[in-house]
Amino acid sequence: MTAPDPQPTSFLTLERGTPVVDRFGDPVGEIHRVLIFDGGGFDGVIVRTPAGRRFVDAPEVRRIAGGAVTLGITVADVATPGADGPRMYGVPVARIGRTEVTEADRDEAVECLKRAYVRDDLTTDDLGDRVAVVHLAETLEALDEAVTGLNS
Image (cartoon, rainbow, N blue to C red; front, side, top):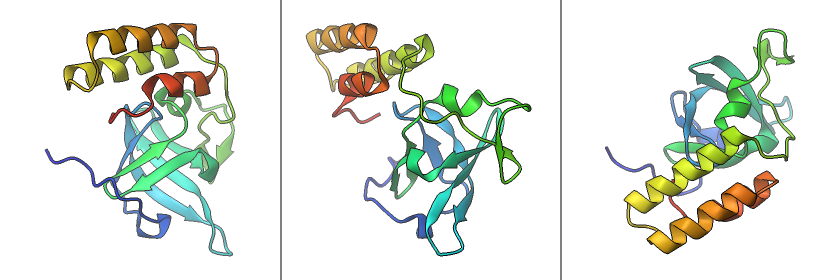
């Protein structure tokens, strides 16, 4: 399997079926549809996930690159909405605007660190130091610091 092209691209060239990953590089699903405002601006995407289709608002799309879209939210944030949650375009809305860390977030960050360690991107000491940061993190931004510089 070839790695996705890291070059940034535009929402205008984003294709259906493009893989979507969360802020820690964990697979979320794939692009079902790109949503564009009447004036031409990027509104967000509808992602096909194992939990069903989810609307992800434009501010939660962190990076669009050739072969992958990276979200600023976690897998749990995308999967959480239920049938009774808010809807946009008839699709449940992914949970957004959250800053506090959950145990699921910590677990995802540790998994990301373990993948980097197996790829030899981290030494044993680096892994231990970063896992300690993960366990002390109280915000998602603090978790981001623990995984900064790693290729998911």
